Image (tube, rainbow, N blue to C red):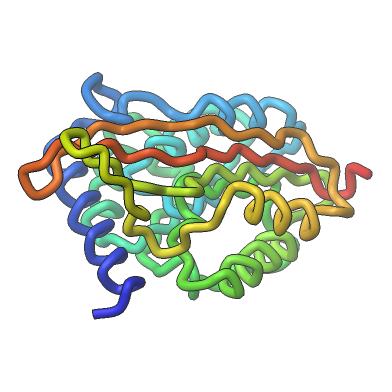
Length: 235
């Protein structure tokens, strides 16, 4: 099995287990709260009947709070995820939180999902684009996102780069198993070029460390976590 398929299989197993065991918005996992940058950038969008696209939505960590905030302007979030189990959970959580009419959940591989042109005011890709099959697919998907965004619309991209695994007992370090493991510099270089005609709102990275047990060993998963946001036609 090649690296991409092994990485994809690992990601599916990890997320299916997490979504089964953890409860959305309850402490104990990263599902406990939405990403603040996602909510912060929503606030700068003045549109009525807002249309939001959440790529790699999972069970609604960001989709549901966004849907709650745009209910008053007759907004809607289109949510896309690879896992049927995640989409089923998302629909259940949407009903629980009273946003079913403001949210549409679809099962699709984001890489192959066709984004309708000139439609969305806000596009969210949180922990999503690092799961593309190649650098070319990464670039192609961003171009689709851009074509699908209206003037003055905003993109919020959050992704892991430079993923590595560190054995806590031996200190041995190796590259993390993820579909697209770009360096932070390479990711920023691509993003800066693709968004050269947009207004860059945020461009930053922080080190992210996550302790986990893998094959009975204590492992530190370390990455450079990128936050990149931009507004179309802002230059």
